[in-house]
Image (cartoon, rainbow, N blue to C red; front, side, top):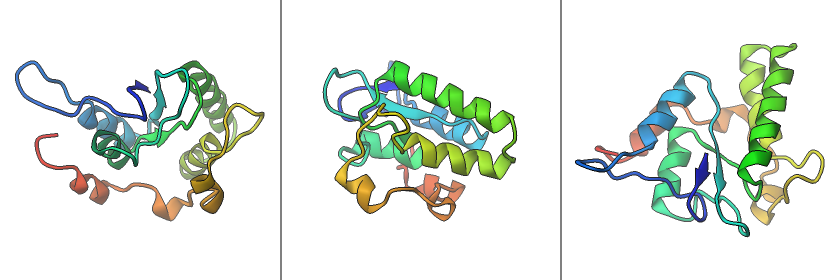
Length: 138
């Protein structure tokens, strides 16, 4: 998903407004990964910086860092292809999450935050209970 700026997405609901948080949550619950990238030429998707990006993160979106949207799409397609060729359902989610955050061939820079927490273990993966942190109506 090509977000705005540092990974912001539409979150306001009401007449004329369409939040993407429920879409991301629905995909996440269905086992479909969503990678949050930025439309900006420089910078990176950092969903923890602003509230709307945080809502996407809470709904299950993975941060794509400084990968361009097309780069993230190719990488995710490749990882999902690997998953189909031999990973179990639980391994698929764990490996996809960990490898999307890693630089496999120079496609992204690993930030200082990611160096401290290089791979996100399965126990920190967002569960349905984390969706409760998204305010009602979003």
